[in-house]
Amino acid sequence: MNMYNKTFRVWQRPTAREAYRQWFISEYADCLGAFATLTFPRPVSRNTALRKGKRFVLQLNKRVFGNHFEQHREGLVCISSVEGELKIEDRLANPHLHYLIEKHPLVTPELITDVWSEIVGRRAAHIGVKVEPIRSVREATDYILKEVSWEHGPEVYIPYDPKTKKLLR
Image (cartoon, rainbow, N blue to C red; front, side, top):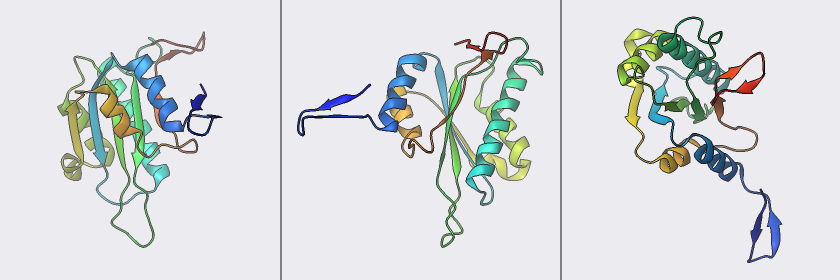
């Protein structure tokens, strides 16, 4: 997956953003349906944001497919990234999560808001949830990958069969 740079006549490794973009668009462009931005009511660390994001995906899958969705080899394809870092000099900076969520008839903005409100608290949650339909997969992918590097890649949730260890989608 190297690219040839004509200006300098050298082979260059693509950036993390380009590599992830090519993979997402080639594999999951037709199944993504919603773009969600989830924020926290107060400042949290990057690790806390990732942990709550994993819990969000788990709870969303449980609401859509039932408590035993993993045993039935079901689940939603979700791609997420954390944007923003908590800085010492700027205590108001707050990381937030961006999600690309698979199309499903039961996944509605109300369900996403309800699941997120269970995780961060009912009073502050409605302010921190914005859900939009995906108009352009390329633009949504570019937005979710804008702060991605090889060290901090996106979180990708894809259902798989635990017995065969193969992806289902």
